[in-house]
Image 1: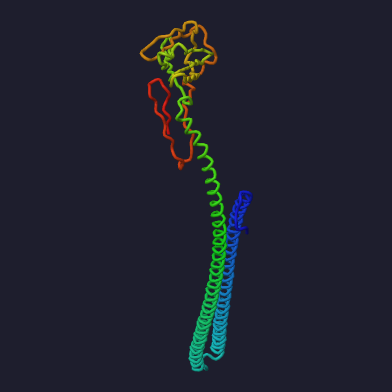
Image 2: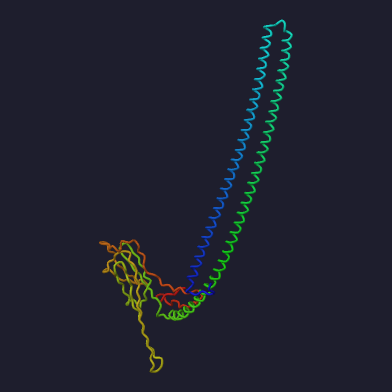
Amino acid sequence: MPSTITPNNAADIAEDYRQSQIDREERKHAHDQEMNRLDRNYQTEIHDQKDRFDHSVQGEKLQHYENLRNLKHQMTKDEIALREQGRKRNENVTDELAKATNTEENKFRNQVSNLQTTHNIQLEQDNKLNQEQIDGLHKTYTTQQRILTEDNQRVYDQMQRAKHEELDKQMALTAMANDQTVKHFESERADTTSHFAQQFDEIQNLTQDSLHQLRTENALKLGSYESRLTDPFYRLVRVDAEVTETSDEVRIRVKVPPHERENVRLQISGNNAQVTGVRSNSERVETSPGHWVSTSSQQSFSERVTLPAPVDGHSLHVETEGDDLVYVMNKLTTHVHPQFQSTQHASDRKPATQPDFPLNLPKPVLARETGRNGPIDEKN
């Protein structure tokens, strides 16, 4: 990197600065895209983990419900089988009692009574045994259900802990990546800012040197300009032409000293009127016997204004009102020239203004107007 800057490579430095700004914006845009991609991947991973966890829990629940259905179905089958066995025994005993009654009713009455009693006892024992088996199956079902529920809860807790650990790990990695990216960006921004601050200082110093040289040159030119300001010959002469109109006349009022009125003329051209004149002065003085000094100067001036309507140049006549000359012309009513179709009647006169010099240059001492009809004042 060069240590100084010249006007030849100032544009290159500005282009490098603009290109570095573009590169920095591109790096920032790439960083934002990378962060968005990481965030999308992170959200996708969380969504996939949640889906896998939900599917796993749903599968465990379905397996648990299937086991419960199988256990309940088995218990129902066992209960039906026990009831069927009891019914068959009851039918067998009843058949035996009927047969014994039919064959030897009187002989075996006591035996039938004993058999009935035995049957009742046996049936009660069978019912009791069946109830005990049903209670055992219910306890087994309840125990298995509790074990399955505890296992499901344990698996669910493990998956929750693994999920939170993975989330914490991903968040830590993301935070670390963000910190590294911010530190890298801040470092590059500080280096770029320092580099271009140094270049800006060099450009500013070069600009100050150029401005100092320009001010020196303008100061030399201003000296000659000030000498012209103090000379009445170079001052602007204005007659302050003012245009007014009535229903049938157009009047142009100008300010001209009485001793110069014979040299003032008014010319009409289309929709314009131009006041022209010549000022002359000659003096001859004998400063000492046989020593004569003479001077002669001549100055012409003109001022043009726009007429608000077509006029008859042959009707022009001059009136005097105080120190003013008034040129009066009749309006034309038979034909209007196309250049008078515009509604704008403002004068196209532009006032003279002083050149805009730097503020740090000394202001000249300006001569002020000494008479009403003399040269105008210069204004800052």
